[in-house]
Structures are given as structure tokens and as C-alpha cells.
Image (cartoon, rainbow, N blue to C red):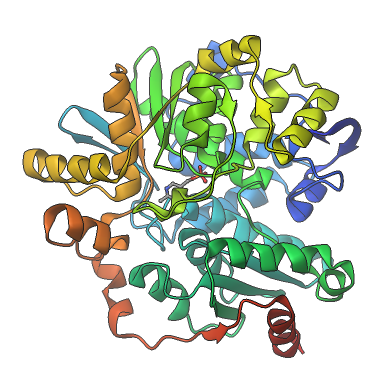
Length: 456
Ligand SMILES: *Cc1c(COP(=O)(O)O)cnc(C)c1O
């Protein structure tokens, strides 16, 4: 399969470039040049596959020139052997709602589903090509933990994770800082998540530095993450056995919900996607009114969705503009100037597939409380936003993506119901384990020095 950049579709790339680079040199995001569309007969053939076999069928369509189907299949089996659920994900009923539980991986959030595979794909590629890289990533909590778990102990890779000091939940921190493998480095920055992200961006754009350490990232724009996530939309559709399904997706960077949109483009009969946001509601304003204007990021009780400009939205812009990369590049310029209004005809196209709602703190807490009282089920605050958005829009046959285990966000749960959810037994050991991290100033040079010293 060939790929192009959303900002220049005249040049072609292969999966290796797409996977290793993440972002195109022109600043755009990679998308496949053409997408496979399954016929109804072809979909039926996929219907009874188990999760790993289904993953292999779907992901191999995108990665044939990088890894053989047999080797991919064995990496997928290895990746998902770390999950507490044999079928990786689980569909559960909570009152009238259906949840797609995606948090049964090692770090209790859906990001494990893609990241465990990415870690193994990296190791496969680097050992085959005798290369070494250093991954540097900023996290507001979940990405860093998922990336560390996926990369720890792998050969030819180090990982450096920057988190905002004292601004993530203690469970989120411990999932990162109790890891003992020698290729994992945790840095707590005296600042907020944006500061961490800025440091990483500055290090990437200092080409002398970033080349000298073979710096790489693992953020949610990587196409490999998107396609690994699209698998659970297929899986859920097949398991539910309905003519069509809608999904409500707690959204931050628009990666997870975009993965669903790709599965629809590949022929899966999905009706609507509900883009569920917290008070950082730019996507809600964009999708309901065309108003794509960013405001300052607010800290909420669903911190993994505290994002204003959702990177993956660029891919949607590309598709709704008939795969026109010139128009996409122009719109991205406007977005950079914070002056993009979605025109009426584009908005109509978006609204054929997407609806959106936003839930504030009180609404989110009351959803957690209500579901606990009525259904004896504790929802994490991100999932609660998804449930709240689906309720507000009263969509029939809607599956809510449950993106994190409630024990990962004890403060929010405590606020809602005055008690907390226990960690899964397999993870209880974390609580008394020694932590290891370095606190550094909000200063890019200091972080660079730290990294240089560690990789010598
Ligand atoms: C990352 C994350 C999200 C948001 O996913 P995006 O792909 O960024 O839209 C939602 N919930 C949880 C728990 C997350 O970790």
C-alpha cells in the first residue's frame, strides 16, 4: 500500500516511512493513497475471527511491504498476550448502554491496544536493520504509561517520558515510575503538559540534537496506531450482530474516533460517531456549529482529553475535501492562525458521519454517580463523558468506548461517589513499589543534557 501526505499528495511513501517518521516532512499527516473497501461478502468472512486473527487481516492490508502476514500475526499474538482479557476487548452492558471496554491492557487505558503492537513493530524493524532509536514523548498521563510498558526491555530502544510534575494521578505516575528496565527514563517537568510538549517539540526541531540521538516519537498521529485501533470497531460490529451501530467516543486528539471513521470508509456499516468532549470543547463547537476556534486548555477531571487542537482532525479535513491536499494545506494555515470556520457544505458532509456533545464536570460526576447507584458500575471520568454525550443525543444502538479503568482516576471517582475502585489484582503490586524519576526545570537545555548523559 502506498501513502501520501495530507498536505501534498503528489509524493508516495511506504509503510516503513510512515511508521518510523510519524509526521511527513511537509508537516502533514500520512494517509493511505487508496483505502480497501470490503464488500458485504468479504465482511462476512471476517465475522467469526477472533480478535488477533481479525487484527492480522486488517492491519496486514496496510503493512505488507514492511512485515509479512505470518510475522505480523506472531507479533500481534505476542502484543496481546499482555492483556487481562483473552479477546483483548470486552463488550459489557450497563443498564441500557453498551460499553466497549478497551482498558484491559497493562496500563489500564485504551492506548495499550495500539501501543503494545507498536513496541513490537519497532523492535522488529530496528533489530532487522541494526538501528537504534531514542523515543521522547510528553504525556498528560496515559500515553506515557502505555508507551513505557510497550518499550520497556526492548532491544535497540530507549524511552524518555516527560510528565508534568504533580499534575497527573498517582496511579498514572506509578505505572510509569515503578518500571525497572534500564531503557526507561522518567522526567517530571516543573510545569504543565503544554510545557512538556513544547520541550519535546523544541528538541525535535533542533535537527542537530534530534539527529544526533536518533530521536523518534510515538504520538497518536502515527498511522500504525490508527489502524490498530480500527480493529475494535470491526470486532464490535461483528459481535453485536446488528444491521448498523453508532459509537460514542471520548475524544482528545481525534485519534480513536478517526480510527472508527476509517473502518466505516472501509465498508463497515456504522451509522454515526459521537465525538464526546469535556470542557475542552473545540471539536463540539466545530462539529455542531462549524466554529473551529481554539481557546486556552482547561484542566478537567478527564485529563487525557484536555486538548484544544486535535492533530488527527487534519486527516478528516483531507477526506471531507475530496482528498485535496492543497485545500487541506490552506485550511491548516488558517487553523494555525486560529481563524478557521468550517463552511456550510463541509459541515453538512461532516455531520453525515459525526455528531458531538460536551459534558462539564458536574454532568460527568453525576453520570458516574447515577451509574454506580443504578447499575453498580463505576465508570472512569473519560468513559462517563462518552456516556453523557450519547444520552444527550439519544442515539439508538450506541456503543460507548470505555477508554480507561476507573482505578486509574481515583480522585475523580472519589469526588463522584465517595469511594474508590480497586486496581485490578495484577497491578496491586504497584502501590508499594519504589518510584524512580528525575525532576527537571521547565528548560529544554536541561532536558537535552539529561538525555545525552543517559544514552552515552
Ligand atoms: C487518550 C485518551 C482519550 C482520547 O483519545 P484520542 O485518541 O486522543 O481522541 C480518551 N480517554 C482516555 C482514557 C485516553 O487515555
